[in-house]
Every structure is written in C-alpha cells, then in structure tokens.
Image (cartoon, rainbow, N blue to C red; front, side, top):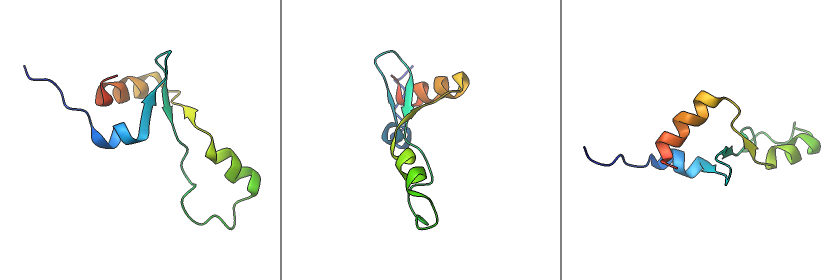
Length: 65
C-alpha cells in the first residue's frame, strides 16, 4: 500500500507539540476588528490546544505526525 500524503491545508493550520498535543491558532481575527475589544483581539493572538481527542486524532492522521 502506498504512503499516505500529508494534507497541505491541515499542515498549514496545525502543528504537533513535543508531548503530542495538537496546536492551532484561533479564529475570528481576520476582519471586522473595529467592534472587537483590544482584550479580545489580544487573546485571539495566542495559539491553543485542540481539546477534543477525536479531532486531534483525525488531525494527526492528516498531517502524519
């Protein structure tokens, strides 16, 4: 059976940490920023961990990490 190819879209959006958790960036930071508070925009800058185990497993399979 041939090797599975990396999903390019997923590879751009997710990374796997040293402990095997999946890291992602937050949404809602691209446009319509005037009505959002500075605090909200500042918190959206930070990366976060994918919390659902099933989703993390699927993402890992897509990026083969």
